[in-house]
Length: 449
Image (cartoon, rainbow, N blue to C red):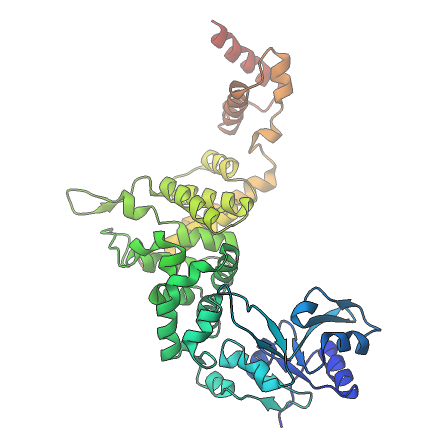
């Protein structure tokens, strides 16, 4: 029998359960990953022991009891958290997410029966014996995502499973079994019964895969994408009539996503960077498509989409800023222009913007050359290393100095500081305190005239 490497913490808990006369098994995702020769992120266990019995058996360990009402006790073993859950049988689901009641069971098979997909409905004991009443191992070998039992019932119980099926298929490059896929398509309209936070979290996991386009295409094919980001649907099959593009807009977007670094805010920006194109398209007398202002519109649309999906403020601001600036890729931009771009985007995002631009360019026609953008990244690093002025934080004077000159608090004071910063960046004046104060006096005198 093949031996599987499990963590020291999981081994400890399983051995102690056995010595206490209780059944204990690895269950769910960790079993799936072990069979796929992947290292599990964590090890979850299921047991015949009731929560109160677990407290007694592991009284010498620190226990996390937040999930005790649901039968889950977290057991800390040398810093490793092992979540251990009593065999359960779920009651009727009340809200498309959670059962109305939890009933503890004495049966491992009954516990496995309540799980979502066959590949997650397997258990394994200390010796590596597999308990697989629903054929999960065969489905792993055949690369299939199949619901346990009737998929229509499984998805009616918990609507989030609709999204999870897509994520698992994309993660492992599996196919969704025919009847399960049919049920997903039929139930896709119900996905918005799930909280926006849960939807967001599943979308994030898809976007951070090595090849997220697999998941996004599947979201579209199942009808889920139209429910969670309907603004992307008009891009599907949209012909751009551009000499720079040999793909439809949706295909271009997804290739851009695949080519970006595995950072959530860049992947989100790539996913939404061209959603403004459909509404801004114009066709000239030569039949060529143009999309003037699609970056600005796209940034505004992205902001609303991300707010709707409950993203945090920092992510929303970063994504909308990257989209707003993703067209500023002229090969003719010089050092002054780069300084201004760094100032507008910020040092934290400037290389992310470059990576988005490079991915965007490479996702157009195959003969596009990104070398000027790669060179620009080097130039930006040189500017940052030189510590030359980029924004008004490094300006030789401050708002306090302008107030001392007689300026009043308000918008004009900020505009003046911005103007002085631009003058220094453009090398029209030195970043010298006295020279800047003199120019500020001149500006004030002209306003007072």
